[in-house]
Image (tube, rainbow, N blue to C red; front, side, top):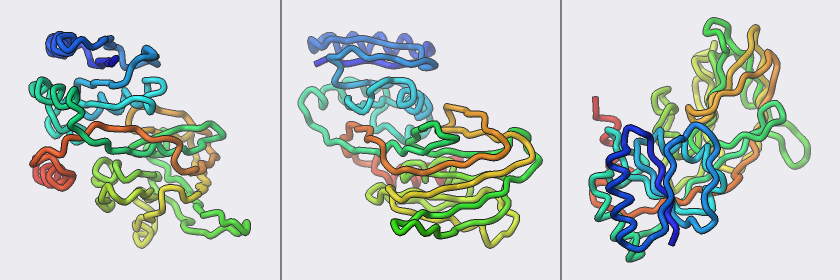
Length: 272
């Protein structure tokens, strides 16, 4: 089995210990520390072990090519570690379970959206705001139907728009007052950010493969922020098209006591 270890330079000593442990199992180990540019994994890589917080996991998802063909094992270092069940300090136990195949897989969809004709994928969310904070965005959103009818869902002004996946419902969406979505429900949430009309501050929860088109107009250029990682400068008049699931990222899960979705949400809501 080939395994790749991804980590930032601040965790070099911890990574060294993890790589030594992996080598003791006779595994082929490669490592990468620069998560700011595209990474190509060796062809024999089956598992990608990520040392870091949730932000490190998101960077790996954006910069590692063909990641959907591997299994992800995040070992957390952050405070909440929402995407991981074990910390890096518990690596020995986690790796032993992987070697015994004592785990299940949990799949999270990568959602495809076309922004000005360019395909972008997100696992958490995509946010569009003006590059300059002051002006509002004029938003027109509708759902295309098979009979070529367009069902209008929003026509309003707002500080921005947010598209969130089920996984992203516990991230930025949560801070905007959006719903928390059980991971068994594969959905997309579309929400206006601080709309001009308060009644429009109600999100739409859509099936994950529902089509959606959003037309956006602003006095200044706009900015698309993808998973908090990637930034795309947009023109003053643009549109995006939600296209559904592109592929799935597979996480290794152990179902540890105290590490369920609801345990983690409770900690997130009650941790200062």
